[in-house]
View 1 (cartoon, rainbow, N blue to C red):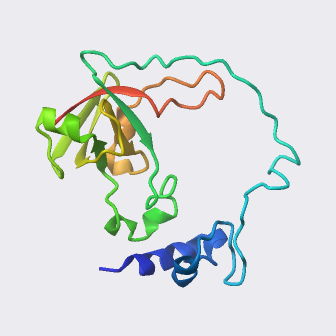
View 2: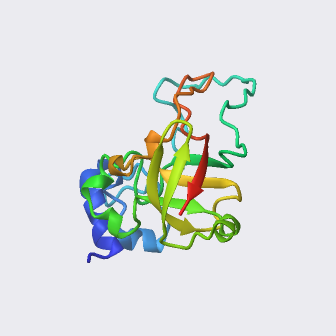
Length: 187
């Protein structure tokens, strides 16, 4: 099995903006991307003087609109899907490396209180079901999620996490509502 440094070197080889972030350099001090070469100092503040769309970004105040996905007696948990450090974004790059050796990508994070109440232990296979669909994953018991909430990464196509997310869209950017899905979990 490769160690974390060897795996990181594989990531650097396919991600040019991080090519200069070597293991010895980050052991000395933090480095932020873009850092394309070994002699680049890293980028202290991303977009310090401009943005991809020009010199200034337009900000506007938006009204809050609650999601249609709310916890209920039938679906008492809220599932949040997202990314993790080891499975960058959609795994379009990290999925070709051995990052799964650092952290599995089929994990479902659950708070210790919820896990205890439901009889779910670390490593148990669990079923997550919403009114839209279901998927299976491996429980990881952690206090990095709050009671009543679950977290899972969405990029592993084989895990079928997005089978459980709905068709709802955020009312402002009209992006899919992957961050809020009412679900139930069972061992």
